Length: 360
Image (cartoon, rainbow, N blue to C red):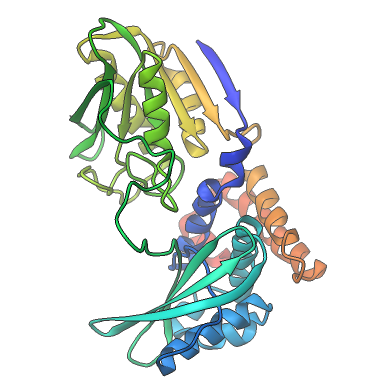
């Protein structure tokens, strides 16, 4: 087996890897964050409240911002976690500049206010969700809504393609259900080498779509034009895949990769002795796990893969994100990083769920 380890700076610096960290940290808190905010003309009282919330967070007044959260959210998302999240946002998007506009959508008992914001590197929206009590029950960072349908990002492949593209399904090894994906294959050739693309952490579609980009569609197009068959798949609970994401673990995801590998090796026209794995971020870890167990893996490519354990990476990521936010005091950085290190020791040491919840 051959190994290619790639620290692709463009991808590593993009929100691809950081959003995975945000989603994990905030999923533990019972909330998920997405993208950013700004300073427009407010049409309603809740739009003004959402704009004020973004302003408070942007200047580091996390205490005031935290006061507007619903009690059930306050108990799960601390001020420190909110500060760390915003530090991660600005480390990727650049410093916060201003608010641009707001808009509101009412959905049953919830009012969703979207605050469009300008950061140094790009524009993003902060979505604040209020309940009937006018308290914050959701805080998401989202890409701006496209003004009109079009081709999308310039690098997104568009048909006609000089290769075959087939919708496929295959059974999961664990938990029942089927995985759905796209298999692309060069035309008129037999027994071609093949690759399985593996997404990073979080629930992602087969193209690994984020912020309007479709990096796995780009990779699949490139590899297929170079003579490879390529399989890219919707993650558990995403797209057309019917496998439940509940209780997902690294072990389950490794089994999912193994199922895709077996399907790809048996696909007509694929050289089963030349099938490899290409993984990004957590996908790079999964590629290494599966390759260590199976002689069926001819090679692996690790994009933004880890050279040390996750227990070492997590505190380093948190510290780097906090230091990129100049407004965070050194004492707070040290406190948050120490908490992360303690938590990682507990996780790596096999602490029970009850112990971890108490510590959190």
